Image (cartoon, rainbow, N blue to C red; front, side, top):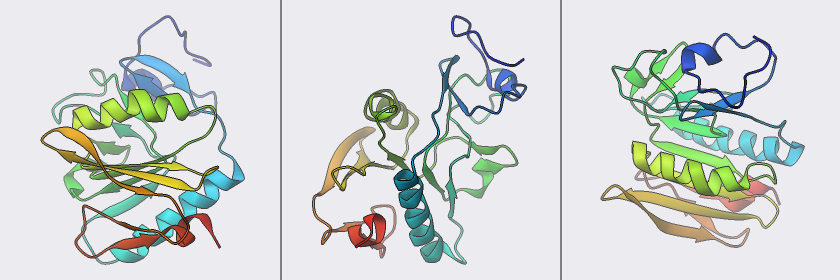
Length: 190
């Protein structure tokens, strides 16, 4: 299949057969194509991946930058039953049983989405609620234009904004780890 029909519902098994070179996400079976990220977007992904990667070296948790499929589903669901698949910009996963050769099956512990004009409504809308629903413990929304980071933590199955970084002198305490703080200078550059 070269291109999915936007009027039809698909599963992860279907998505695995698409060979059009496009990156796709599925929202309740509806395919959404992802645009190519900007240079600024990729620089932030790289900076965050390096920060998390250095901290996690030798630890159980692992960091994965996009493209990396996250199947939001029940543990027992087969590829033919999974209808929600996202490709977060950065995922941190602490349960090695969730990681397989296809990506992550279940909710990562932390997800970072970097806003772009084509993804802002998905990231702040549909993905926000999906991540909350599936139990992603911490969710960051990074706005590269305004150099702002919103940090949400799951409390009683709801997201509460715990931190709103407004200047390059701010540091973000990573909620899922006791001793990790990341400077906005390290994310956005000097």
